[in-house]
View 1 (cartoon, protein in one colour):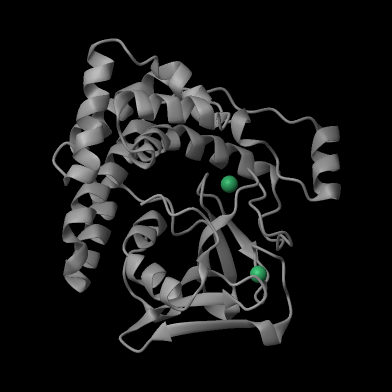
View 2: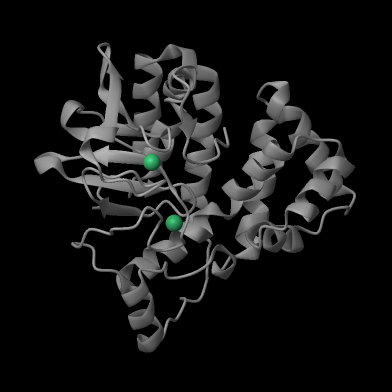
Length: 292
Ligand SMILES: [Zn+2]
Ligand SMILES: [Zn+2]
């Protein structure tokens, strides 16, 4: 568990280069995301946040009820590090196609003109204040999805460090029988298959990886074998898409037994958009919002 996650910037670079070789169509998008993932790793070194304390009583209650440890609004963000990273990501996005570069330029200008209060912006994002986010995007005349992507990406290193700390409260060997993340309650965005049929889910928000039941839909908690299927392509045996015929949702899965590459899951999510397209063609719906 978690062995796929702790990569250095250099290893992320290698992972990105390898995927670019296999799937050159992703070169442009991976040039951006590769730099973004490395910037996130760099940012971790400058983050100082206090651990989140959960009392023994609260822990027992949460375990008993199978509730997640915290709510998304409880994550502790290092404001200074997040602000630095936010500006860095916007500058990096300035080189990508108009879909990202136009919003990035408008945001950088707003920061320059002191029209954006970044600490307030981060806390509004974490408290899922959609009205605020929409008003800001409309005011800057930009796409709300790009704004959400830059915002989420810049607070992500703090979130991941919170998650590392909080995971010490969990029993890593035990399978979690719920569809949502045991740390933050978000839904999984990706799954991994390992030796001995071990299956784990990867949180779409906090990047926590947890052991999941082998035959199980995280979106409707269906466990009925005959309504759980998957599809894959002959050319790409390392991936498969797990499908629930009850709720018609799917989760992309990497079969670690069929690959020798260095795996960085956030990269795999970006480099498998063709699987999302294929799933959509089959009338299936993604279990999580695709923020890419
Ligand atoms: Zn989570
Ligand atoms: Zn389902």
